[in-house]
Image (cartoon, rainbow, N blue to C red; front, side):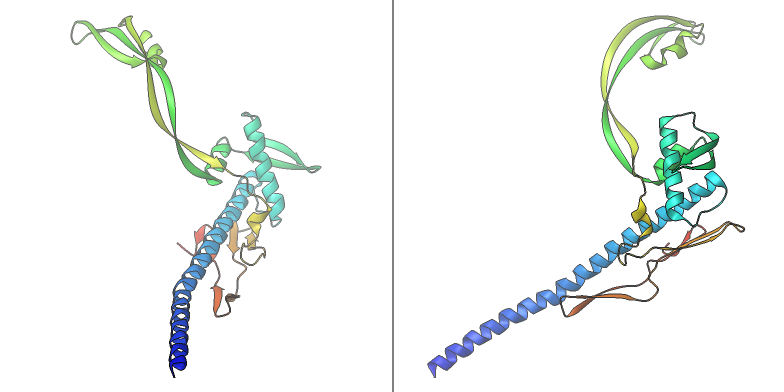
Length: 248
């Protein structure tokens, strides 16, 4: 009898531990799956936006959208490289790529627009070495000489003034400045691939009406089994139609 009671107690403890483990699984596994779904959705929409922007840049360069996504991507990236290498690379140009010539019209703001579109905004703190000058100017309002301070790089603005008298002091200054910049990336062939399904996005082009549509390749609910009891599910990640995003 005693042995049976001890065995029952052991089985009860095992059952309690199993129940606790099952409860933890039921609570946390779905949360982890939802987070995974969210990550795929964010990455997929990021790629769709980049794909749409690439076609827009290509249309600005050539006048039409290009159903050949890789060709459009290579041309846009090549123009960006040319602009970086030569600041005078603007206006109507002939671009030779893979033995083929392309006529492009490069806007003067192309590099800035490319870098801000395909780039992540970042901030850094730079230490700036500067010189502060104490200068003397004749003040007509006060009818006498007056002193003021300015940075050395702005000195020419004062020396060109007929009321400028002289520099009477100079002091080096070190200051920290918050600088905004863009960490640029080059879109590659993965831009046209849905990270979840591995399929290409659906790109619809109407050059006559200047229509452009990028859609997720997921047309029905996508499912994958997870841990025997659960499923990873995802519906379409949306569309971008003539600049309008379905998820906004």
